[in-house]
Image (cartoon, rainbow, N blue to C red; front, side, top):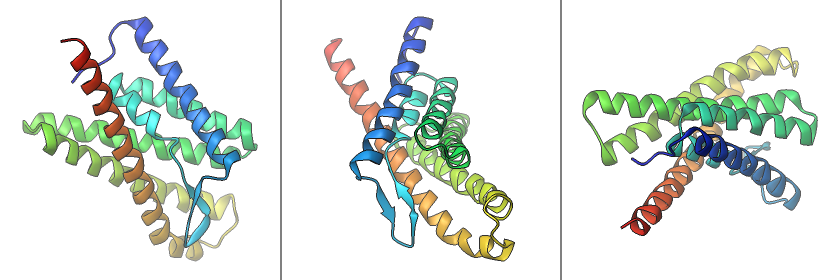
Amino acid sequence: MERVGGRTARITGTAILAALTIVFDYALKFSGLKIPFPWMPFLKFDFTGVPIVVALLLIDLGSSATTSVVAALGIVARSGDVVGGAMKGIAELSTVVGIFAGRRLAALMGSGGAAEKALSLATGILLRVVVMSCWNLVVLPYYYGLPLQAALGMLPLLAVFNGMQGAITVTLGFLLFEAYVGRTSSQSR
């Protein structure tokens, strides 16, 4: 796998990908192109996490963590919703930490290629679902004032949403990364 090398290249790449999360968030929000989750329309699918996954695959975990924080701060700056911005940042960060863990696990098992990618996808989505379920059990009752039983009742649909959003994010992130690597590899020959 090719990675961006050099300190300046890593900082520049992180800044560009972080800016792209802001562009995606603003563009999708103000264009009305965010797609509502049918069973909970206040949840919306977006592409904000794609540059965060690309940051992990192209640069490193620190870059994707920084990009996640920038995405969360951008949402807070745009909407004033600190909890919503934090939840989005946590969701995307947990996804890339899961991908990172899956890649490490695949390396320990001696797996590569499609097996590594499948394991990374699965661990990224699974960690996102688990982490966001836990956070929702804290945020829904204590911040939004929902009874704990109502929050527990919402968990299956929240898990489905996070699984679907995680799959979109990870799949598109891997596709963009592979397209980039394929393009740069063919040009360097």
